[in-house]
Image (cartoon, rainbow, N blue to C red):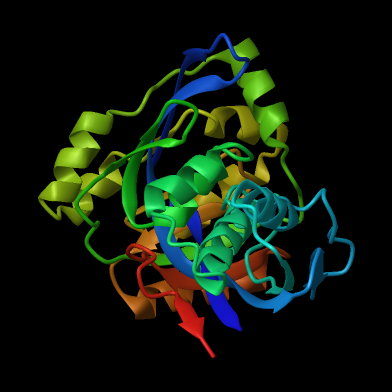
Length: 292
């Protein structure tokens, strides 16, 4: 039996460089793992895939990325056997935090360990990229520059530690919807990825905070103004910076101290009906597989 943690992510930057011939968008984004995670327990069964979830209404079949990741790897490596997956969800769904991708990444890493396939991280990333652009990042984790459609990764220096407050409104945003509306509206400001990468290398918290930028934020705020309100409250309560993650709708705030982060979270819990989480930035996924 293998237990694997799948960490969520936030975007420190998200830039869209144009539409690709394959229909995807060319992106350039600095992505950061956080220690809010789902837990997946995997065990061998004679054949097939059995997926159980602790969240009502979430698909437990081929529509689920975790199920698809298991099928892809078992078939791709010609494994004689199946896998039972018990998934405990903590990462909110359709939130811009790569929860589904994190689960798929955890399954790929877990099946690789369970069946002792010996695949490298790069080989697992190649599998993951076939079913989701964020999956390679969630396989590796840490602090990365992601380009291409998000699957081309360049390791960056780790960010200095931040406390992170997440506020996920009771709305869901489709990534396809956000990109479609971005194509119609464009962006007023684009991230300076070179500058934020330099600030990360210098461990300059204030510099990193000043350079957060997500070109999808304006699109999603236009439809859901509550996102702007959450950002404002985060800043009022001491965040170094606040921004929407991915295509949204989750808003995150970066804090230098736990006490400030927890005060901000308590205020947001009082003022909103959002799901609120307090977590920290996280490193790469080297030690998140446990055998029993």
